[in-house]
Image (cartoon, rainbow, N blue to C red; front, side, top):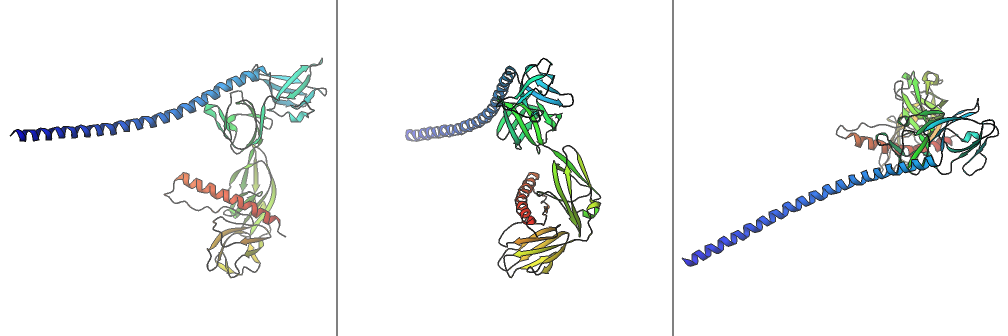
Length: 409
């Protein structure tokens, strides 16, 4: 009986140790989970604190920069009145604009002190001025050498709500008194388009002025019926399918505009002005019509078969194709099928075809995109990403193709 009691006692004691061990294991797992969760939270909080700290430091540095700019007695050129020989300047020290007269005797100097033309001092330039003569004219105006200037900036972003201006990977601050110019007009920061090329002047981490050096205008097409679904080529890099009364935002400049569809088409020179709309009536670009282009297909495989719009052609012979869009397919045993779209809008061209290339982009004597419909299951972001990659590939191909077209005889 005593033996049985002892056995029962030891069994109970063993169970107690076992339960205690299980309890410790469970507690340990819960504690580890809590610690990991806390670590992850701390890491997120740390990132937020770092970003906030970085932005606070940027703001603090910007305030110091502005104090230095005021002490340096810097001015921003705001406006020229050449008829009355007057210039309006903004003084950072007083946060006010002043108008000064200048004369032939006024000395204009670059930041090194060398002679500079008056035209160099465009609105947005940061300058020093020096004294007035007996007639009340400025004696001297010189480009400030304390500031930095970034020209032809195309990679930038603006966060208006936070007052942050990012150039490449570096962030800067800008204040309400930031001067932004498009030609001679002062505009708002919100009017800057990410597609425009700018010149930026600043001190330290503070942007003082922005000048749009290459802006955008609008191309508007009218009477598009005959050309809808056909090709529009603008310059050497812009290729678009024509839609009803379409409009395009285009960098300012002078271009050769070409259109082609169903045997009709022609070219003309147009100028896109900043902030203005250029209207082109496509009825004026029908040409004599129908027009044809002589196209030679240079295929690297001798026994390949060439199909133009589904009809087999002899690729060793010159092909006479009506202006507009054509589907080109080349097949050969042992090679992947080569299939692209050709837009004909020139009198003659040579198209080189290599069958071992696995490409899907279109070609053209003036080439354009052939947008594939995205699957409904694809997300918008994935679709946009594919489209961007496609456009980048096409742009590289256009450059090669343009060189080829230029060498046509």
